[in-house]
Image (cartoon, rainbow, N blue to C red; front, side, top):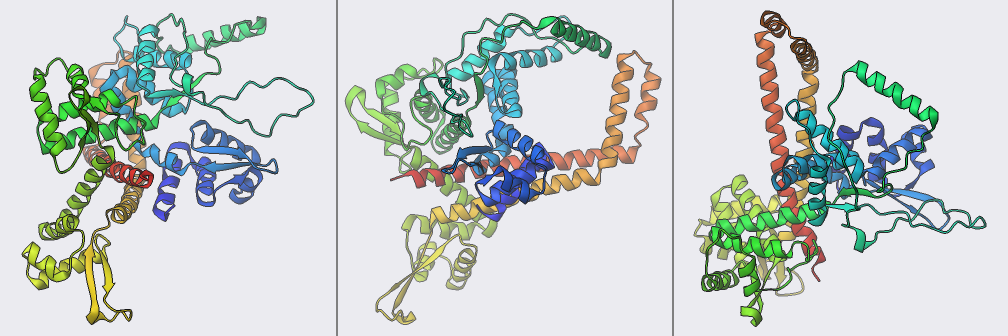
Length: 534
């Protein structure tokens, strides 16, 4: 891992889990697999603190454990999974856009808690939704369960690996750590639960105390309540499925920009038909016949079979090759070339960055090198129609920033400059890696800037929170308008202006983080797809 990635991992862990967990996680990210004793010695923490910290990290799938040959359990950080914390807001927003408020809260709770049973999750989300409703209205458990089933059917949530049931043999000692197994068949099977009830609102302190005493008395009498039917079946968010959705959305958007809305809708239909059958790492989708695509098109699109065939032919003949033809049966078999699509998206990202950084003329040279592969300096000048001095400066500028590379081809073994060809080229993979490193660095800088802004205005933020709390309690008790106004005036006009400025700056930083993460996703997807390609 690069220094930028290590720094970003530490910042994310500190922000979401606190200092102790960050020290443990940061140490594992830097050093690799370590035993419990080694972690405690290196971090200077108590053994109990290390155990609790590791429990939190394992529960959130940020650390995995493995029994070594000598019987020692080693803990290893999942660095890629730690970096995914940055994308949590995007996962939650996607769930909201697909499944509404209920889907949003289901995914949010799973991300906040790492893993949960379905019964606990449904109750918690129903309670949260009831809190936001008008008085007298409540959220039914059955409605929340239905949304959860839809999330599982579309593979956005999945079961966690389980400890296999082993026969009890007193002669054989248990292993130092369990080996978790995943049953592929049951990964998305929702247990049959008869959850009857409605969400509850929060009660006042006195009511809660009374309820707590009643519960305690009941436990003392003897708690004979049975565990829920789904006890031990835990669920987690399927991050790969969300990434597949993001990739599909990017491809559809690219087709819409290049061609038209109808073409993008055809590609969207092809991707939707393949989303569960095609694995997230596959270079192509499964072949689909023209007749199948025609039947699966949305009802609102009144295009005939002949028009669809023309669009499919147009998509297959396009130089970008997002859609490819793989056979003639069933009116023609078509696939979406996912690797080519990701390569085109990454290349477009690189072109855009070159244009923003160095100007339109450099972008012209960059696109020329992408198209022609290898060119000498004189050829670049002629093809790009740029004066020799300017072309030379631009090429050297991009070369120094690692956007283009120089390849030497000697005519003779002595590599004499007069008898050597110097060819400029663009290595898209290495440029994407370099840019990805810079993106990680940018996100880490943005996070540090946000923390600095918040720290600088800490006193003012605390004062604002106190005033808001007083206002809320007074409004609940039915205070007069004059009294409320007096409380509001505790924050002066300059302080209010400062708060507005802080809010504006933090919102800008948050938006910038999300935009950089979109670029990170495109570059990461392209690099992974290229590395997997045989």
